Image (cartoon, rainbow over all chains, first blue to last red; front, side, top):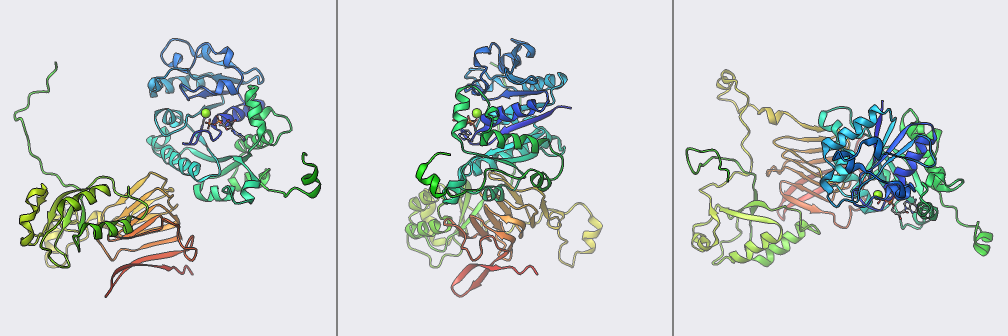
Length: 279
Length: 256
Ligand SMILES: Nc1ncnc2c1ncn2[C@@H]1O[C@H](COP(=O)(O)OP(=O)(O)O)[C@@H](O)[C@H]1O
Ligand SMILES: [Mg+2]
């Protein structure tokens, strides 16, 4: 059985595409056959972050419009055996993603035995974002620790609960996970940012992880490498934890007890570090 | 060119019920009203959304010689309300209303309290009860229960009934009940109890944090946040009437 996972947020620039690339890669690294779809028609960032932009011939919209077969448009990832990317097109026609077309592509991916189908949502609450979440079984609500991002996430959760197929058919609701990204424990300690506890208290959905703010993310995306491959970095480890928790059975408390949050506490730099800087 | 299917008449009239907001004016000077509206709506000039509004002149403190209608109408529009009619107009003021285009509703006007919807057909029982008060309608007997958190941008309206929120609400959500609001969990957003003028309605929550509360049309806003003494606490809101007017009272709720 395939599972469709949407990475969504309402707000732009919070780290959805970074997260989609990292989680899809992480699932594949753990041996699960995974496809990641870029729903951000017109912007197409995912292929850049996955480092496959030069290999794009056909895209999602070509498949929907019948100009290409799905197998022609899927790009095999260069690092992970089990990972395929379905890139977005450059078209400016945002309505090119029809509900029937998206459903057809997802059904075909199911028939191809993909275990996970990760949908990278565009920002906003308009057509593209709704298409990305319509077929979701689970949703990773990507949120930055600031009020406007929390507000937009709250709104998108409401949309998930009204517009997803599961909601429309009255099936079991889409399983929601809160992922807090670009988290800076120092800025939280200094009162410049909401704490992850604050964010969770406001949104009241289970927390799947906290990804620290890190310059490594930009470097990785410049190299076309998903952040989870940055061996030894905080971000890579935090994303690996998220993937592990995602695959874990059990309640949110059990999952977090087994694999506690990391990189969320601020340690004041000691004297030596303050004098000499660096690590 | 295609044509619409032939219809026997070119125009039809149908009866419909419409939701309107009734604004009961105690005074008519636009600056004074502007000040009052500003206080009620606080930092939220977009609290209303173009609702049709009936101006009720039946409770004026004194009947003025002259009313600045253009001023009043423009003020309401600025707060996103659309005056469509007036009701309970003192006879002296009828003349001045001529130029306004507002409909003048007949004697008695609209009732604040919606008439209960007809109960499901059960004629014998109704006859039997003819001398006792009418039975509560099916809607009145049904409390609306919301099992999921109410999110930003979502709105619920419990017509003729109470509402129970089992998972709280978010800021930017809107909860309206003709009866009471009961919330187990954080109560955030805009919370309106006694939606159609029921001043006995109350609001109960285990965790108080709304942007605005209203009972029977009397508002209190928290644009600078809820005071620490009640923020996040179990709270009970009711409307009290005393010699200085009507006032929302917010008190701690003892849970055990
Ligand atoms: N954990 C992080 N630390 C630092 N920068 C990040 C992090 N996650 C994302 N970014 C940066 O934020 C910007 C937006 O990220 P992106 O994944 O494209 O967001 P979205 O898809 O939500 O618009 C990018 O420049 C990205 O490099
Ligand atoms: Mg993106």
